Image: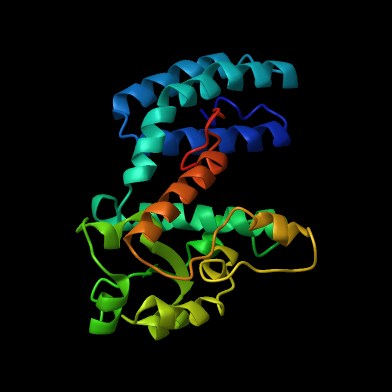
Length: 249
């Protein structure tokens, strides 16, 4: 597909690369059979070679990529809503958490050398942190409360990226002790877990975190709520079509 678009102007080629990434992720997360999207990309590549203008490109993306994502939208929501680390390869979960963290930072700070490249967020400097620990201390167990879903600890809503040094200091402690440590992270999505940053009035940073709810307490309900919120953010990141009722609202 990218080879078929090599004749495009640089700006259009960048858009094509982003569209291919987004749709490929939708295929992967919804477990679409490989033969299906390989066949689609091969067929669409023939059409793409004939695209020579912005108008033709927009029509091509609308007719092929947008319509395909629309057919996957419900399955995408379901997949993100059920997403857990135990059923997904580690590198894919790092990619997802990296994209989520990157998007919040871009919304707040714009594209800078520190936010523009996804590999910054997927580097060895960050690790996946389980907010409710995999091996909780007695205090963490008591504070978290009753668990009805045994997979809750591996759910997307219970995961966040954190710097290695921060992650090492968090350990298996209860959330009440972790909250102030999250504030030390460079990642806005991680910092916003425990407290919504306030910078002036209606600044870009304020708007970026306006819909990110901080959690004074952490329990099974908090994880489910955060998973829904991340589902809404995921729809925007991977360009899923809008719908009347946003995911998780």
